[in-house]
Image (tube, rainbow, N blue to C red; front, side, top):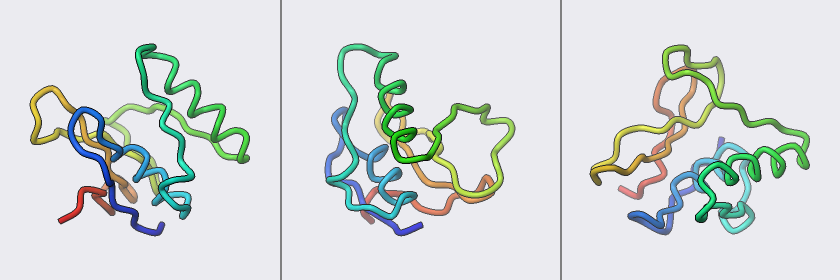
Length: 99
């Protein structure tokens, strides 16, 4: 895992993309932003993007954190917004929000 900081904030923030870039150790600009009006399609687009790279992305319960690296949505300082971080064995490993 190579830490990558997010560059956009608020409702149009890119913490999700920064967390993915961190896990895959690629530049942030190489991670597409599939967010838009179709609420369910963005995740399927990411699944396809990961599959094209020989990887998988899965949704799992917060109650059973996986072993190894994973993305996790956590509460944000902004009401109604989630924030994505990188975890290792269920513990925070990297928060893409610049300090």
